[in-house]
Length: 79
Image (tube, rainbow, N blue to C red; front, side):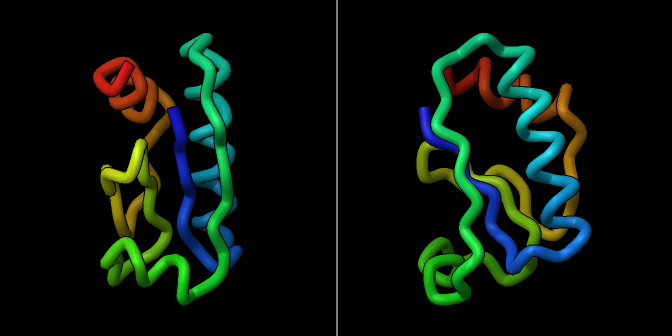
């Protein structure tokens, strides 16, 4: 599974990455967690607002910072 946090490195982007790390740790799943900071790469996802969270190519959240438990539920769904 691949999870990407999209954002240029702002406070909210960093917070989303932290929440994603917590969710990955709780899930016990094999996950490749990656930060995407280049604007041209972010635009490929069609995201207008950052931070955004992408799981296996599907945008799950944009412009907000979901909590670890919500991200964990998405990880389990994608499982």
